[in-house]
Image 1 (cartoon, helix red, strand yellow):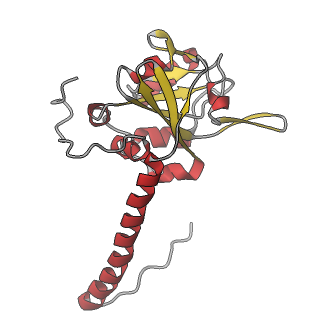
Image 2: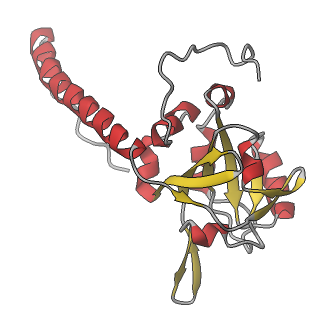
Image 3: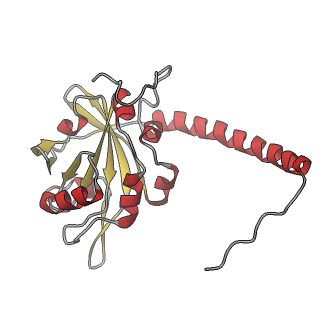
Length: 215
């Protein structure tokens, strides 16, 4: 495999000048990203009227159950078609990076993984990967298709990696945002998902060791 050409070697003073020039561009991008986040949170939302039914470790579950009593829910559309023997490698690498969910949960947001594969196939793969995140099967449901994580194409269907965000108002559930494919590259740690949610990162939130949160 060919290696990229190495950067130019310069003096410390030349490096500092170049770094300050780049820093100005990075700060402008940060301000633009913050403004875009505000626009994202201001997006209108749509009520989820269909009753979806999933299968998980505790048996059958509704979309409302996936919230775990919290106000918001982030769903990872993990590519795992019913006929596959294992889940998508790229989705697995993404999920490996999510990390500790306690910080996200402390901000009133739950995280769940949903795939079309039967739960009996998800369970051994999840154990093999050593994951403890909540994972549900939408095998007998339209959830993936309705939220564009499974799309029709000539000859059948194609899976699509993505993340969808939901907000709960009592017993009512609303879809607020979805992102797919390469847009997932800007995500990773669990707390990064808050930038996609309607309520966003809470102001003045106190970060603790993950074993010190009280739920």
